Figure: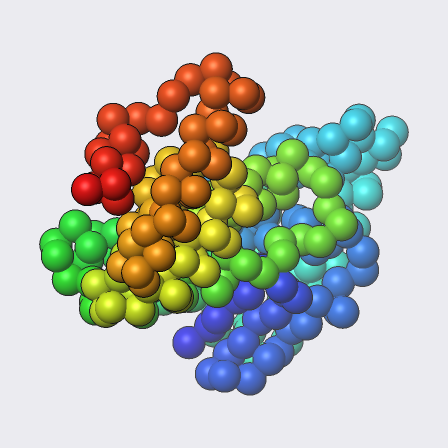
Length: 252
C-alpha cells in the first residue's frame, strides 16, 4: 500500500518504507506541483492550469519549457522501482498531465476529511466512543503544516480547510471527553478550537458545558460573558438562543 503525506514534510511510503522524501524535491515548484497533482489525480490537468499554479503572478516567457522541466523532474522522482512497480506515474498527452496512483493509495489530506466526517457521524448516532479514533486522526493531521513557505492561492485554501477540519475535530474530541466524564480534557479541546476561531459559538458552548461538568460553573459563566463581549463589541450582535440556553442552565 502507498501512503502519501502532504502535511508536515512531504513523504511517500510503500509498504511502510519511505521511498520519496521532501528533500528530494528541488524547491517550491516541484513540491507544489506534486501535492497539487496528487490531490487532483482523478482528472487530467491542462498545462496552462499548472503554469498558473506555479507562476501565479505571470508565467515566464518560456513557461512551456520551464513547466516541462518541473514535470520531467517529478517523473524522474517517481521512476524508482518501488513506485514504478506499483504503477505510479505522470501521464501526458494533448497538453495535459495526470498523476496515476493505485486506487487504494492513502493520502493524509483525504484521510483527514474522511475521519472528521466519520467522527461527526458517530456523534450524531449517539456513539461517542466510536468518534474518538477518527477525531484524533483528523486533529493530528490538521495540526501539521501544509507546504510551509508556499503562498500560492491553492496552498492557502488547503491550509484554511485544514484549520476548519481541526476545529471540527477538536469539538468532536471535546464531546467524547464530556461523554467519558473527562471535563478537563474537554476544556483543553474547546480552548484550542477557540484559538483558531475565536467567535465560534459551538466551541464556547462546549467550553461552558465542560467547565460546568468539572464543577466550575463560574468559569462557564465567565466564558459566556467573554463571548458576549466579543460579539457585541466586534460584530454588533448577541449570542444565539442555543448559547443563551446553555448559559441559563449554568445559572440554574
